[in-house]
Image 1: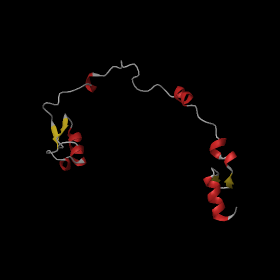
Image 2: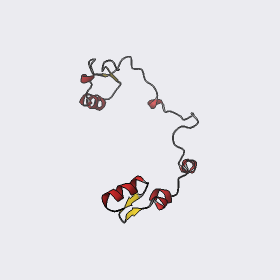
Image 3: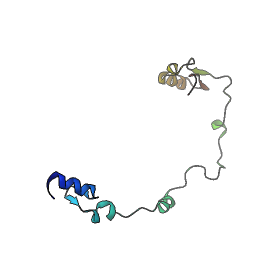
Image 4: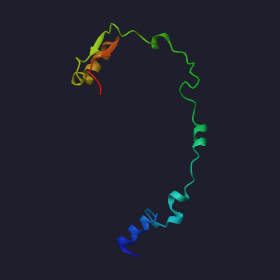
Length: 104
């Protein structure tokens, strides 16, 4: 087989196209690469998060009442909730709530 038709047939049969040419399916890069063991990879990762559910949350990071917010972003429509309004409210600080209308 020659030309582009031969290349398409080889690729359809599972050959790999490399800078050096076409590698037959029996020795393609994916077949020659060692397969990763997902369990081994998971054992190598650090233990992030709160796996036991007993992390201490500082008082300042706890829940706050939103019944009397310092700032309300939006006037009831999605268009009224702009990123500029969020930036302004965050810069002023305090409790921020959103009134962006109904969600679907």
